[in-house]
Amino acid sequence: MVGLSGNGSTSKSSSTASQRSKASRKKIHSAFLTQCLVLLKRSSKQIYRDISNYWLRLSVFIAISVSLGSIFYKVGASMTSIQERGSLLCFFVSVLSFMTLIGGFSPLIEEMKVLKRERLNGHYGITAFLVGSTFSAVPYTLLISIIPGAIVNYLSGLHKGLENFVYFSSVLFGIVMWVESLMMVVGSIFPNFVMGVITAGGVEGLMILTSGFYRLPNDLPKPLWKYPFYHVSFLNYAFQGLLKNEFEGLMFRPDEDGGISLSGRYILSETWHVQMGHSKWVDLAIMFGMILLYRVLFLVITKCKEKTCSCWH
Image (tube, rainbow, N blue to C red):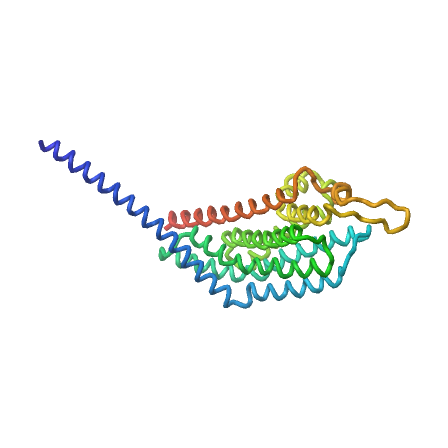
């Protein structure tokens, strides 16, 4: 009888423990949503009040867009405009990526310090921090993508059409998101501002160098630069997508009478060595997949560092 009663009490205690674990899981789930909303609200207020972050970047990008649009004003559809369009796109992408790094790394370092301090107090999880910081920046990233993009598109006379403009703005949006993701990964490894900027700037420089503009893809040395750097370069897919968006559907007239007009697809394959086996939307999907990968990498690095520190202590 004693054994039976002991078994009964054990089963009751195990069932009670399972109920508690289920309840705790529900609490954790609701707490995670609350954490995300609180962090989203707090981060949105910080971004809105900090004029030196997104607001200053937006002002600088607008000034650069006006300058770039006036220099490449109404490039037209002649043969000389082929190089002009490519130069405009590459310069705009390069400036956007470097200005995002310079303007955004210092606020990110401050956020990482707050994250470390509040994580020690157990206020929220890393995933909640990532969700809050990501979605709070989306409205301002859209402003940076749409307004300067519209100025450059209108002044320079790039390929007109709603679909082309939406794609152009989406690529700019993706570039800003990618640079911020890169900063998070680098910042989780090097919390020092100078080391972080130098490291992230070096990575961006390699990405720009192997994007397919300064050295055409078929002319890149295959060891190291073509395989793997060219194929893992985020800006490779951004630049190729922008070129497809710009040249497909256009005809370029000869500079002299009696010449032959060339189609945009011919220029893409023969002049720019663009891979025509997939559409520009595939390039855009690859870009956002790489952004997601960088953010997951940030989570993994941060969690590994926390476990390592806990083991030492």
